[in-house]
Image (cartoon, rainbow, N blue to C red; front, side):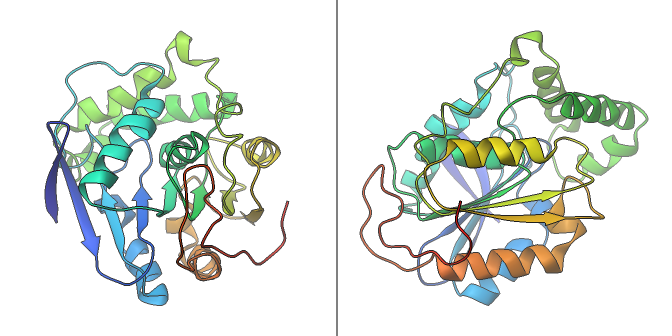
Length: 272
C-alpha cells in the first residue's frame, strides 16, 4: 500500500505490476481500495496487466473530506481528481473497472472525451436516481446506526461516520434527486461491459438500459441472479470470468487520442 499527493490530497493506493494498459479500479460509494479484496489480483493474474487500486478522497486511508459533498461530487471526481491521479502515476489509455459510484465516475470521465480510455467495466453503474437506490440508502443508514455496518466500515476507513454520512446525505439531498448522466456519457465510444445482479438493492436493469441507449461504443452485458449490489464479491467466479475475457479482448496496445478510446483496442462479443 502506498500514498501519493494529488492536488494537495494524500491518496491511498496499491499497484500491481504487469505489461500493457493499466487497469484502474474505482470503488463504490462506501468502498475503499481494500474493499475490492482479491478481485483485482484475480484479474491481473489472468491477464498479465498492471493495475492501480485507490481510495478516493474521504475513503479508506486517503485524507478525510472536511467539506460536505455537492450534487456534482461524481463529476468532480471524474473530471478533476481522477485525471490528477492518472497524471501523477503517468497512466494513459487505461481500462477502467468501476463499481457503483466508481462505475458512474468511469463513465463521466470517458464521456468527457478529454482522455483516451481503452475499455470500461461498469459493475452496477448509476446514471439516474431510482426509488430502489433511495430505499437501499435508508436500509444502509439503519444498519449503520445499529452499529452493524459501522463496525465493518471502521476497519477500512479513517472516519467511518464521515464516509458513511458523506455518501448518505448527498443521495438523500433533494437537490440530488434530478441527477442524471445520460447526456454526460454520450461520448463514451470505447467497448463497455455492464454487470448487474437481479438482487441489487440500489438499482435495476433500467440503469443498464439507460447506459446502453446513451453510449456510442459497443456494449456487452452480464446479468446475474442470486446476488446483490456487489456482483464481484457475491458471484466472484462468474464476474471474474466475464471481466477477464472482456479485458483480454480489449487490451491490445496502440496509440489513442482523446475522444477515441477505441484506438488500440479490439472488441469481441455481442455488440449493442
